Length: 54
Length: 470
Image 1 (cartoon, rainbow over the protein chains, first blue to last red):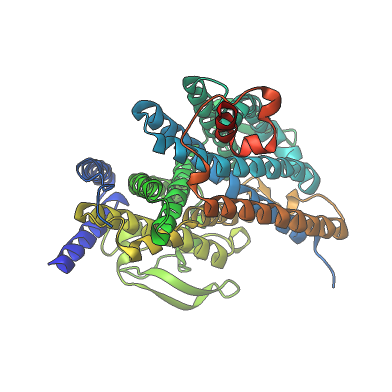
Image 2: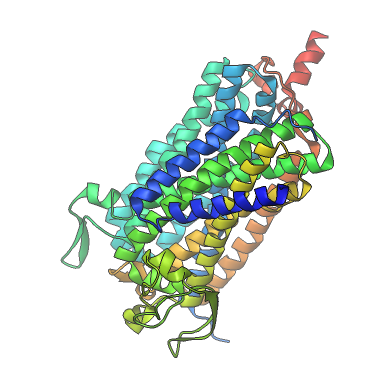
């Protein structure tokens, strides 16, 4: 399951990269950029990470 | 052996400007990073932010100093090594460089002292204001330099009258076609450089099991900034690509490694080629099928224009432009991957415990600097054989200086800069080895100005305060 999760994350990353470099047009690129950044901010706020065990 | 002065002059400028750009890239990125960190300290009162600020302030100060010193050299090289260029371009870019001094250097000079030495002498808000002013100064400085360089890439707002270049529209000179895209591209590159440096040093501490709180906070901040920034950089980079394809097609033709006027369909994306400039073909090429069409033409079967569309005497050297572009782009893909992986690890709660990821962060510490250098090589070598695109050829821009003079000064530059980089690396590695514990999380006033400049006080002002109190 952990590996599957990693593969899914990689595929999402590749898809976002392709969208952001403008493969599907500038409008999609801007929308993709906004979604990626907002998604990243949501993850940062939900998972501050510093409390994680080492 | 007969030495060619034109080659020596170009090697000298390439060496000095390549060395120089490393330091402004760091100082632009670190200045804004420090402003954000100080703002967080003022907002949260968390002493850990102050410790991070003090730790990175020392490294910022050294990069800023070397950046200023090595930048001054370049202005002199314009006049000494490239006098015909200075003579022609002076009316346009001379004013831009002068404006950089008037607007950015004066601002930085006014507040840098407060930023470096004032934390224990002025109030925290005034100190924060000084940090912001220095950060703004670096941005203004970058804006003027990018305006001058972008004008050389896509000249506008000038006319040739009686064999002299005359500015007819200053707005067009400054806001030339490539400047609005190249400026954010460079600034984002500088911020990415700082982010990966900060995250890389934090990752090193985590791997060594030292300074855990500091390391966790900096890895968390560095990866967060890097993830957001690299997404923006990929987008901005695509805009820069489109602009340069329109205004300097030969550069992008060389960057993609195709020679044919129209490539095969579908076009592959080459990662490795052995170009043969004489016969206008590749001796060997290896790439990913379809990807060239998808990335470069945004269609499944699109064809890419090759370098034969540009007359031979106006072509840049493909090998240099191609590999510089691949290094920059390859590192951007790697940075993006690191950003996505960091998000995934954060989500899984393993951001600080995945040693392979921490090692990757350590290896990526200089990635921003390498990518920025590679990007500048694309920009400058891709513009060849022009120094001002379409207006002045590089061979016509070189001063009639004897080869011996150029060679001796080149050797002198190499020796002096070797001392600079050695000193920078020794002191930076010393600061990193010493760790953030040497920068205590206090911000008390340390006493008189006379006492303030003594080395042991600069090294550790809070210790002096504590001793006095004791």
